[in-house]
Figure 1 (tube, rainbow, N blue to C red):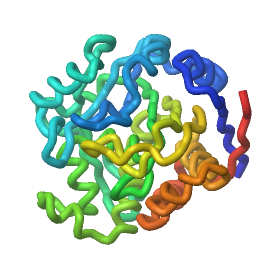
Figure 2: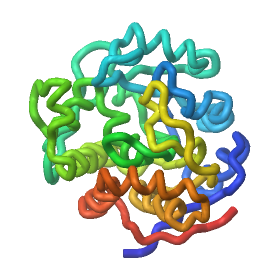
Figure 3: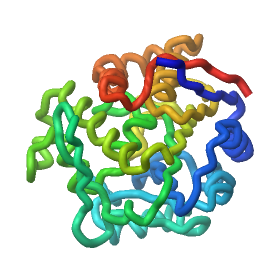
Length: 292
């Protein structure tokens, strides 16, 4: 398979996020969903609206989110809307909680290795293309969070998140989410991510921002403080390649904090998600970095 192109800019600025998007040469058209992590209440590491304001405006996008599967400030639509306001998202952007009301949409996954369907917010049908704007960092269950997690757990509805975590068990409990086979969970994430790429049929762009890199996700309240210095911005049309490139940048860093982050990734077998997504044909781990 031909190597995928992954663009890289070291300096993290709102303007450079637009610049790296332009470098891809892929224009998102129609109604554009911008999937990002809006941050749990009390989290200190999530990327703030001011950092992404220029790119959201540039693509004329709508910020989209979905409710969570755990107790917190985002597990109901009412609380989630209030937090989106508190975090400043509604001040700058149109915001759509895609599973706010009504029945979920089911995306079929005929070639899924663990799950054969994915529950997502029905409002996903309102969009023609998607900008997956991910904050790359660690994650207490997935090992790391990047483009693939944003496609899977991020786009899934509250019900869908629990379904993925419970590796396809219908009506699984909160406790069930933490008692599953880890590798099967990661494979279920890859399965669900593939259904979203199929849905948009190539009309997706991926941008990963490597800043505030904690071992914890933006869903943690509070999260552990970042353990590494910021690395930069990456962009690609391949979700497998961009996540692999981020992993490699951490591994090849001289930052002493990298060991802490890599321990989290390795202990949770985080790169198995990348391997699984590659096996599903979502992309390739072979890439070339293009510095801008």
